[in-house]
Amino acid sequence: MRQLKYFLTIAREGQVTRAAKLLNMEQPPLSRQLKLMEEELGVRLFDRNGKGLKLTDSGELLKQKAESLLLQFDESIREVKGMEEGVRGVLSIGSVVSCISLLPKRIELFREKFPQVTFKISEGDHFYLGEQLEKRAIDLVVARLPFEAQTHPQQYSILPLPSDPFVVVIPSSWTQYFGKQDIYMKELAEFPFLTLKTDKTTRMHEQVVNECRLHGFEPNIICECSSVAIIMSLISGGIGATVFPKSVMSSFPSTVFKMLNIADADFQSDVGILWLKDRYLPKRAQQFIDSFRNVM
Image (cartoon, helix red, strand yellow):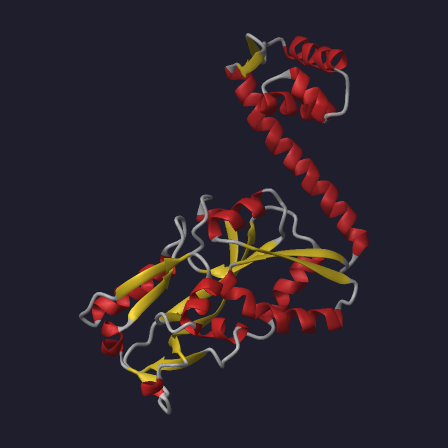
């Protein structure tokens, strides 16, 4: 296993000198280990290219197999240690901003039952959170569905959560809507519109725009934002309105906005918890996921 780790480090760095520094060892012993591997296997793993190294076809194959073997080994160690740990340690959760409001109550209840668990919460878009899952920097993700990460959807296990209805969010300074609880889609046609969209995650933006088109108009989008907080700041300043999942609004003071139910449209935002299939999941993560199952 140690030789495979040496080999992978050299393969990733493309140079023995840099690999040795990362491994906190001298270059000559690392070079000897590489030579031993090549002699034992009877193949050349690298082509020497000036000061750098390039994997041969045999080296590429070993790299793929070694990454898989070391991942399985790491998963096995985690699982063995987990047998004795019980429900304790740090639970690392990733969440998109629009789902953060789903966590506080669930964490509060979970901590009452498992006080030895602490939390680390990371925020980001689907692309970033997918990368963090792959690196094992986080255990699970709470996100809008479908999950728009770069990895294939079949890599994830998904627990769907109750769907979240969309609502219209307008500045509290728009006094013409005082006393109203509902709004019709056609009224949105004249609104200066703010929409949530990043370079890599566009699903919610497309959902809202498509619903507007179904009601016969193109929304007057004056600003695309990558942040829920930025949109809410613009709304509090009277700049425009938006359509958000209802649960998002519980994270913001109701004095800066007014929320209206949509009278003639019933479209929802799907939500779910995701984790990697075929990877060891700590007991604390399993129990946290189960806590959502128990209230559905």
